[in-house]
Length: 183
Image 1 (cartoon, one colour):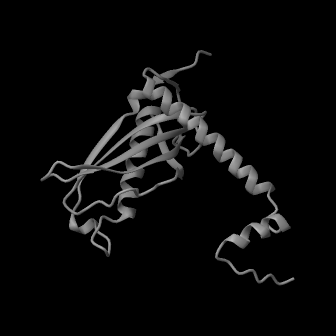
Image 2 (cartoon, helix red, strand yellow; image 1 turned 120 degrees about the vertical axis):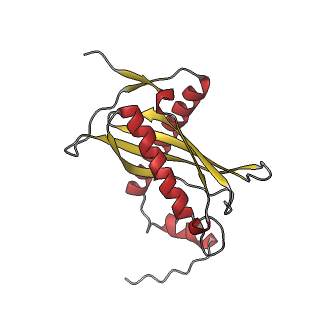
């Protein structure tokens, strides 16, 4: 059977939303949870556009809030599928905010959502293979491979590492921790 491909750029989605007072947290900045909700929505839109199916969020890889977002700023999110597996896709998201009076734009965060394609009965389905057409798309795919490899290494380390070994306990001595182990 011949492999079906879709171009990475067919997954691109951009949304912009004006940040309102109802979106702020207790310190007057835009609530991070609200931004995460918008990021999840755009990841869904990008993955569903690419796969042609319903998609669910499987994981979110590192969300670093680099700059706060103010009430009255215009937030823009750009997303695209950077990597595909069999039924999963990694969607890269970049979040910026713009002060619409001054035109100053800030990079607020970047993140990677792993989305999984599902059929109407909730079973995972295969997604099209990805066609990369630009150096940027190739870089994004290669970076996704690197992140996946590091994630597998970290998981393996956590499964095999003896956290109660003398080496592990010695490592804790340089940190602000008091051990009180009951035997």
